[in-house]
Length: 406
Image (cartoon, rainbow, N blue to C red; front, side, top):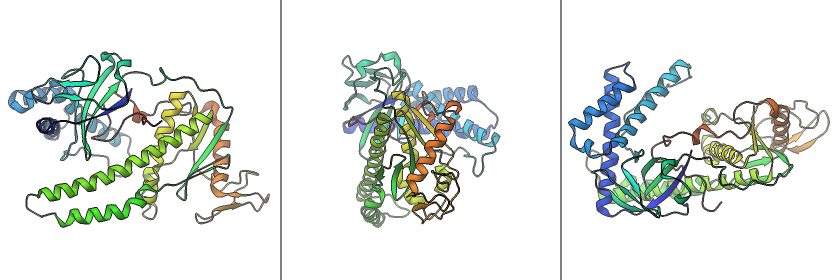
């Protein structure tokens, strides 16, 4: 499964219809969740039967395509199952108890409620919400795939207008030319001062998109806050200021994603094996001194794209335990204790001197070469779970596979 995304430019009456469809989807999800809370222990059959009752009781719910209502119920079911799984597996901290949605930004259709034009450049939503025909603007061509391969269609509302996403059931390797083997292997160490250092001695600068845009973000946030009126309906000027602030955040996140895509693709295309640390980013951001810098670097996003491109181009990606990779000498193997502020590795046993991050990258590569023959999941470029599944992940996040610049 992978996702293609197109931008659309709906007319004012279509925007009203799309927003109504999104609110209806949110209403169904929240009502089903309340039904589960009041009747603990019910399962999927009861949730879908309750959805049928909602369609009979409320006319605006009946106007939304039945498959779109079912997709909203599946969202609730997914949240409930995740909560039960976290409790069963004794996950530390909060277990993710399902919550009501207040600002849903998407509505999802399955295999009905929409129809593509003959040239696949337009999509028509056929339910009674009145969305109508939308032109698909983008560089991807849906003509390569059969209609039966499109399993989900989703309308997403973002700060910079609206998008339509298609989940396609196909292997991303089908239309890819095989790369010539480079006979190279590389280990990479992710950092904050530099985005990454590899075992070949190369370093990639950290662009720090959020840090560079922080001054502008803070200014826009102040302007938004000045127009906020507590306890009263917000003015149009507040909504405009809120939108400008959201668009700036969206720009920063897109800059970060485009950057990690390019770096990941370059590493995959120039190496047959890429080794990296199996970092627990969720745990690392709990450090209040480094949380902003780690989030700005986008380590998890980079790993996700590295694994995807590894799967697509048939290259090996290996995640190794990060324990002692920075402390151990890559030349003699002895442990050399050093603090985080010490940026140069100087071995007191063999006299080897190297940059701390490059030394760690060499250790990561050695670990990968030792375990590559019997490593676990994702070691041979398995498709990451975040990119698999018929249900599109999240509410409103960008999941378009690959930029048109790649």
